[in-house]
Image 1 (cartoon, rainbow, N blue to C red):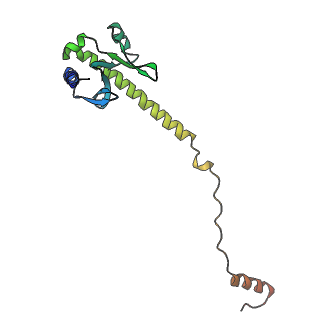
Image 2 (cartoon, rainbow, N blue to C red):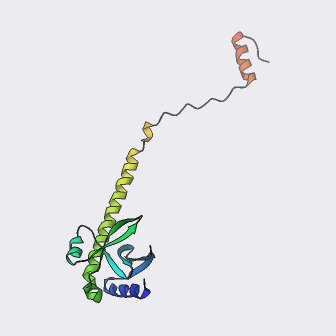
Image 3 (cartoon, one colour):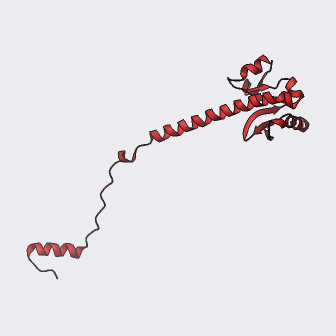
Length: 160
C-alpha cells in the first residue's frame, strides 16, 4: 500500500474534520474523534456500513470488504467507496458522514452491551446479607493459675 494513497484519502476527508490514519493488519484504519469509520487496504478505501446505510452502498454498486481467514472468506461491514466520491472532497463528504454515523451507532451498541453485561455481573453477586453469619470471636485462653484459683474458691479453700 502506498503512503501517497493514504495521504490522498486524508485530503479527501479534509472538509469532514481532522482525520487520522493508523497502521493496522497490513492496512490503515481511518479515525475521527477516536472512532474508526474507514479502512484503507491495498490502495482501496472502504467505508463503515450498517443496517441503516448499507443500501446506499449496495445501490451505488460498492463491494463489501473481504479477506481470507483460515482458508475461508470473511467480510466486515465496510464497503468500497464509490468511484465518483474518490474524485473530490465535496463528493466524498456525504459518504464520510454516512460512514461516521454508522461508526457512532456501532459504538453506542457496544456501550449498551457493556453496561448490560456489567449489570448482569452485579446481579449475579450475592448480597452481603446472604453471607453466612460470622463466627463468634474466640475467648482468650485462661491461664493455669486463674483456673486453679476458681476451682479452689468453689471448694472453699484459699488460693495461694
